[in-house]
Image (cartoon, rainbow, N blue to C red; front, side, top):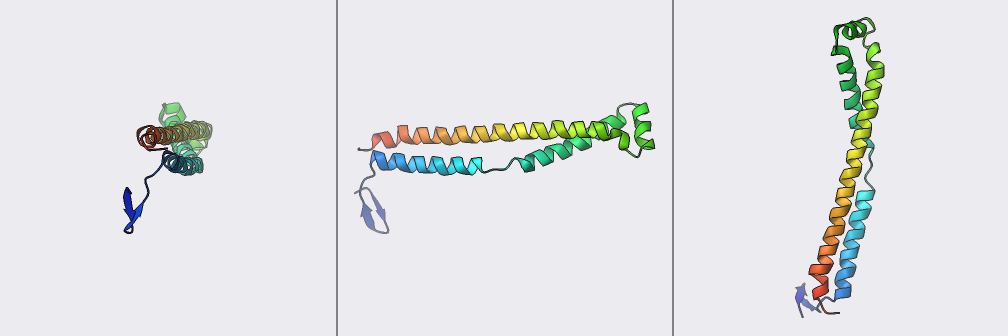
Length: 123
């Protein structure tokens, strides 16, 4: 008897039970990571890109600044839209990379659990 659960001795855990528990943890972590939505990241990146794209256009040289004043900022719309596209795309790429990293971390934790703990238990 190895551990007590509410005072009741539990039998030793087997390699199969340990591996199944590790797999269950990996599955739930993977499902949680895959359920994350990218839209919050994309929206934030697009908003920031639109604002900075428009601002850079309007202050980059005096002629463009004059165009922004005379059009009430409308002249900066194409630059703002391009900035939004770039910002949203960049934010989505970061979201993907972060999730790939999280998935790799979960897989690594599973591998370490199986190799360092489960494989040392009796069959």
